[in-house]
Image (tube, rainbow, N blue to C red; front, side, top):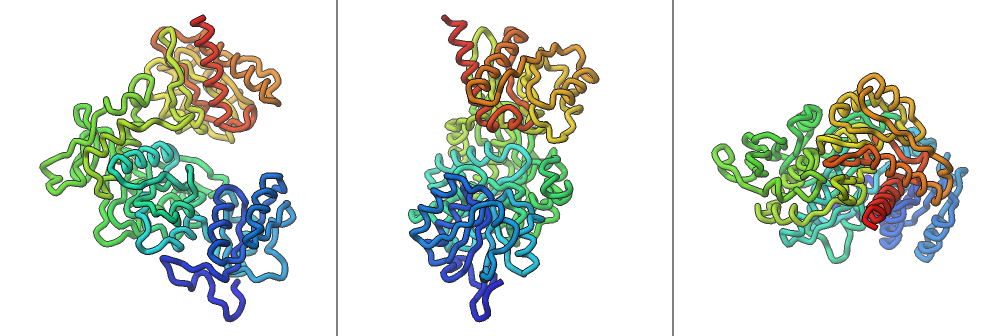
Length: 502
């Protein structure tokens, strides 16, 4: 806690928090940790960073900031206790650190405030800084905030997607040129350590079991997600088909006049956005919403986002982005133009190629069953590349639902048994392939393995099928991360297509 006579972080006024003179302990030296250290050092704070990894990357980052007075403590021995003999005014923790981590537990016991980078950014941002439009949920966050960014820019606003994607929030919030709006993606980890978001509008897209080892229970995980609605000024956006999101809105403590805005794939009621005869329709952000509707675009405007048109979960993400943009006052035509201009990020239902009547789609970002379920709903006939580290997730329901639309499945990954057993129980008619993993300990071996996987999928696919990489599992058993898994899939597909054309 703060030394006697020194004003602590919690006691200093904000917005426009002045961090000068504070001793800030930053736990974790990743992207957000580096940004926090950089931004606060430049404003007169004394900063100590701790990180278990005494890596060349971390040492180089420390050397860059040493000119501002950074003290870096690298190595696992520095992550279990507070720095000895020093008064710490504030701990700013990286999202991956669990609340029961020993250093964080020691800080809490000592009465030291523990904030996320998000909390710090909100307090340091000036009163006339950019508006925040927040997005969270188990799946679809990145698609929604990047769609939102595209819509806001189509409206002529200086906007950026930030947070759990792209630019750290603290850099966006304190940008010297000044943004008009921030499209902020927030994970449950970030929200756990955040108390003062004050978003203009916010959305919880969906809630399903994820990160329960970190949060302890589904209830605590949902509660962390629900923090995004705290003090919302204009609109709390929820998914009408997911009662858990509506419950979070009902429990939220919002500003006077904030409204609940539903999104769904059916015809919308008042204060909702939805779909009518292939049109994206707003019955929420117009004066006579009981008797009129505003057309925001068409499903055809989104058709480029799927191998057979935009899948339902992408349409729902578009409606969420549209609702948040409309809450900020964006006109109808900017929603349409932004959605037409939008292109999905890498590894998120990305169409790699179409050849010989077969489309190849990279959704390597589908690292859990719920994310894969959404991707599997996008086409009627699929050869599914599935598997990896399940982390104990139940895959039975997913295989049962997917079975009727599968032309085949290619099993990859370490945890083969849960998927093979689920297929035996619920979809025994689906042909299965299991390519020989070989040696995946180096890049060349991993590339060769993925070529075998894609070749096996092509053998199972027929005219009109979609070969879909949506593994429903994490990647680290055979690949560096989901991005490498997707990159290697795309490279193998292009090799296959080029070979067929030769």
